[in-house]
Length: 213
Image (cartoon, rainbow, N blue to C red; front, side, top):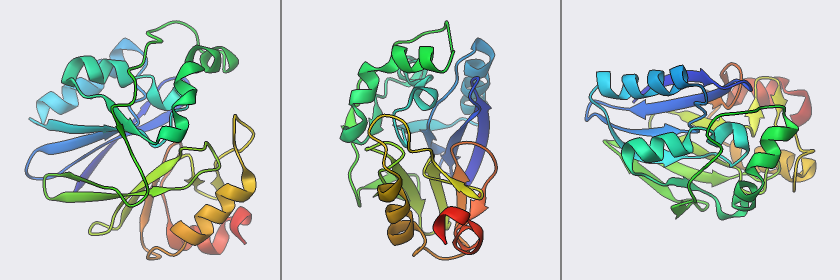
């Protein structure tokens, strides 16, 4: 499996395109906001002859869904996310104002497919297992590829940190508990691609993350 990382919008969201030799791909957390960001994402898909099979959201905070409408218009795919974050779409414009982000297309399509614990998403020769880890938001999920030992972690787990829990319906205890019971049990050399910032590994966070000791 190959992975392309983009950093988009004023909040610096990591958007990921996962693909393999079959040319099928998924886009995870399309955060493209500015016109040049949208063009960059689209050109990557076109230049590599990729066929988009799924649009996946780790959660529905505004910075991770800013490009949902753009990719919906381009590829005709509704985003897939956990039902418990659906309420955040109703607060989309409010979230943008709270973080001082103005302008742009504030529309976002409704969730097309609800993701649940242990769902398996397939594309090409790849499979992603859905793991529900609430706490940053009630519907936060991560996507685990056991064959590649790759975890797309959204805002659940960061290099030396965890997602903030002071936003709507967040829970510190729920987040830490979910990380310890569902993520730290994965192989130590699993690479974690985070929603913001640099990647890390499960083993490093198990030993060094101050929130998980």
